[in-house]
Length: 463
Image 1 (cartoon, rainbow, N blue to C red):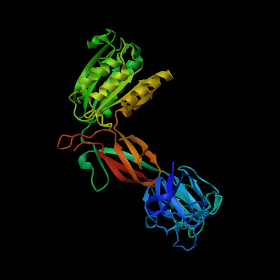
Image 2: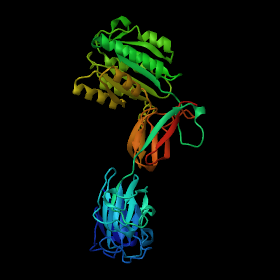
Image 3: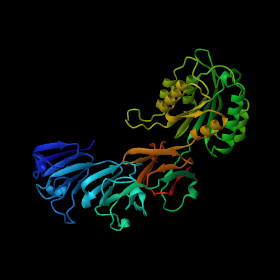
Image 4: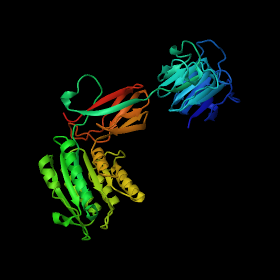
């Protein structure tokens, strides 16, 4: 919520007033304001009532103040005792004004909105976020004037001194983050570095409910992933729960067996596929016990760790899955007293042929607790697609401190509003500093998204 506190005297001397909405005519402090504090948002201060200036001279513009303290008229960029009205600007979108210099009536549009006819002919514009097409005729008539973020005290040049009659957002742009080997990233383009390829543990449900076609589909999906999607050099472990013929560890209650079929090691495609082909379904579903064992499986894995649980049913061996997820993440938290969430392990959940909405929600809650996502696979094709997605490296996109999008390295394009200054972050820690400290997710500032264009950002897989 926007908020401003205005004072009669310099250095915040009382009397004072607080405002959270526009005021067309100040009363007590009309023409008696010498300092102010912008507590939240951005405000425009005018020397005339009804959001006007006491002079129509071109150089007489209102003062636009962002969050901060302004102890005197000079700081406010206004003459002393010269404020008669004020109003806030929205945090995002576009504002169009009836008169030049951001005066008179104002209409604001949020991102994604459009107006085929404005209530007045706009003569000045402030674009706060995104990129917008302005038209001199109603119903988007005539050639559009593409207008990026900025302040336009008079008509943007592309309108050739005509007023604005209609407006809509410019076409969105796309962002793709692609993996590259270090030698393939050249030039000065922004890039991210993933200094360690995450170690992966696959935890596969091979309980009785997976007997028959589901088990054969799961084996085929894992085989395809090994052949086509896991990069060379990645370390992979495979744990299976359910069948007793694998001679794994029995749960404390004696109901259900969990087995480490492949200990964590650098990917050997043929060996791992051979082990997968030996798996047959049967038995119970000890998910909690399998997650408990994953702590041991991954204890020597350096850097980032990704756990992918693939299951068609709920825990039925008396275990507490939520607690085991918490313990798994805590086991790899290097600084438990820190307020920063810097866990090195992320757990994704892939549900296979789940019919109950309540169980889907439970799996989503498990994934959220594991710092990852839930993927709902309704058939074998989606099981492959979504398991592959669960193995990708996630990234987020931020703008001015807010997360506005995200995706996966080598994944689908992310659609974003045109803007200069997006920040891309990887959702993993990134190896070690020379002194042994964990690297934090690196960010790229000033990634610019242009309307109708695709911006590609490479990520270095390893040095």
